[in-house]
Each structure stands twice: as C-alpha cells, then as structure tokens.
Image (cartoon, rainbow, N blue to C red; front, side, top):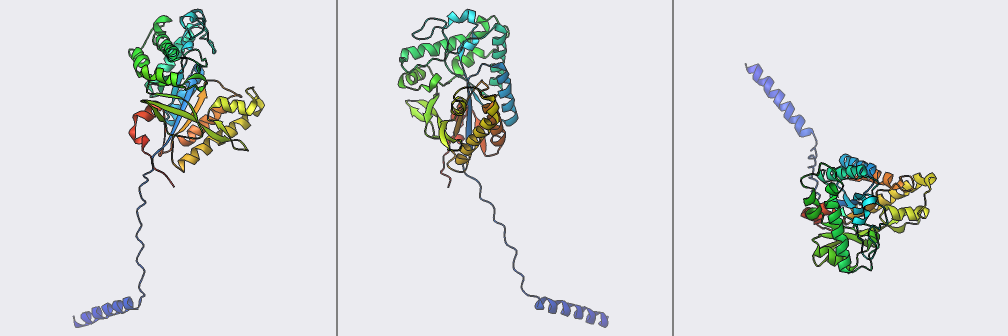
Amino acid sequence: MYQSLLSGFAVSLCLATAAQAMPDMPAAPQQQEKPADTRPKQVVIISFDGAHDNKLWQRSRALGQETGAHFTYFLSCVFYLERADRAQYQPPRMKAGRSNVGFAQDKAEIATRLDQVWKANLEGHEIASHGCGHFDGKSWTTKEWAQEIQAFRTIVGNAWSANKIDGEPEGWKDLVYNKITGFRAPYLSDDKPVQTALRESGFAYQASGVTSGPELPKNFAGLKSFGLPLIPEGPARKPVIAMDYNLYVRHSGGKEKPEQAAQFEQRSYDAFMNAFNKQYDGQRIPLQMGFHFVLMNNGAYWNALERFARDVCKRQDVRCVSYQDYLAEPELHKRQTVL
C-alpha cells in the first residue's frame, strides 16, 4: 500500500511539473455576433402597360410564380371590346369608337383575357388602370379625365356580361369599381387635371411621372405620385427612362432589328442591374421599371426583365412588389441612409 501511495505521488508530481513547464496558451478569441442588418429591404416595382397579349399574360404570371414577385398590370379598357362594339367607348373630344391601340379581335380573346386578369388578381398581382384608348390627355380638363376614368370602370366592370361571357367571378365588379386604385396615364401625362380627377374618383396613386433617378413617391393632396426613373444605359451610360419602349427607341430608333436582339438584351440587363445595385448598396430607394405586352426587338427587353427578376427577386433582403403592396406595407417605407 505504501508503494502505491509513493507511485501515485510521483505521477502527480510529474504532471504538475510538466504543467508548470508549459508556456501560457492564449485564450481562444471570442466570436462576436454579426450585428443584425437593420437596413430596409430593397424594393423593386415592375409594371406592365396595356396588358393585352394573352400569351404574355401567361408568361408574366409564370415569372411571378417562379420568383415570388407581384406585378402591377395597367389595363386598357379597349381590349375588353370587340371592334364591332367599339362605339361603346366615347373618348374625350373625339367620335365614339376611336382608339390608338385598337380593340379585341373577338369574344374568345376577351374571355381568355378576363380569365388571365382574374387569375393574376388571385395570385396577388395588382390590377390597375391605363385608361382606355391610349390618347395623350395632357390638354384634357379634369372633367374630361373623369370621363375617361369612368369609361374604364364601366367597360371593364361590365366586360363579362356585355360580351355575353359566362363565369363572371363573384368579386369581379368589386375589384373593378372599388379595388383598382392605381393609374398610369398614356404618354406619362401627369398634369394637375388628371391628378384632380383621380383623387376625386377614389384613386390612391398615379405612376405617370418621370424622375431624374429613383425617388420616393410624392404626395399631392392625398394622391401618391410615382415616377419612372432615368437610369444610365449603354457604353456612354446615357440616361434613359426605365421602360422597354424607351430602350427600344434608344437602341433601334423604334424599328425592329432582330439581328441585334442579343446585344440589346445584354445592354438592358446591365442597365437594370446597375440601377438596382446602386440602390441595393446605397440608400435602397425603390426601383421602378415599366414594360409593355409587346416583344420589341425580338423580345430583348422581356428576356432582360426575366433574367433580372430571377437574379434579384428571390433574395431575402429584396421585395419585388406591386405599387399597391408598397403603399399597403408600412415596413417597406422605412428609410435609412446606407453608407
């Protein structure tokens, strides 16, 4: 037993001596928690004017389903009338039945379009107004704008019954008469008469302005006013309105050049991404972009849009929303300068 105690004492002494001989080891650095990102989410608002081609209704809705984006569709009421029924539309200062963008070809086309509009509404997209005949109303009076606004509500609101199309959804008239609260004027005319008419007709906003860059909406006596921004584009980074038609005019003078479609697509995509990154890395002001249901330059601008949406709308700190969503969600209005 005595020998065992000596043995244990010797082992303990050796371990203690070895421990004293070892140099002091630095303490492991404590990992600091990464501070929470308090920056506002980057908002992107994508909209479509006219919204008539049924194939592009399907294509845009598929993009929304893939990316989680919600779009704003500014409808033109003439696409819910056959040419034979065009006299139902009375534009200001013109004969009945006039339109700058034509009418629907037949009732089957209208039925398909109505179905697309309702499905988009159920999927969370915003249905808004682009008026009817796509006329430049910059000289119209408030009364004349009110006439155009009422024509839109009447023609779209009665589209199922007037065209003898079965299956009108229960909430269709409520959507058209009460829940369409956004407007974009053709030719981006946003003078005081249209603003007054919109406010008196129960609209919440108009998105007809043009701004020098991304800006927050302004408030005109209770009517919110949004503007499509000028964004740098091309080798010279010359500003252009963030809308497909303006890119089309910039790139090819408003004439089709399908052989250069790939180049135009890449230039547009680069312009969209550069405008996005400037806000995403900076003040995070909402970026607005406008498109039409027309595949200009062999679809260059839609292709660029789809690439852009797939790249940014799925990010955790990005929200691709409609104008209506933006106004309805206070958290999206939180502003903070980001250095």
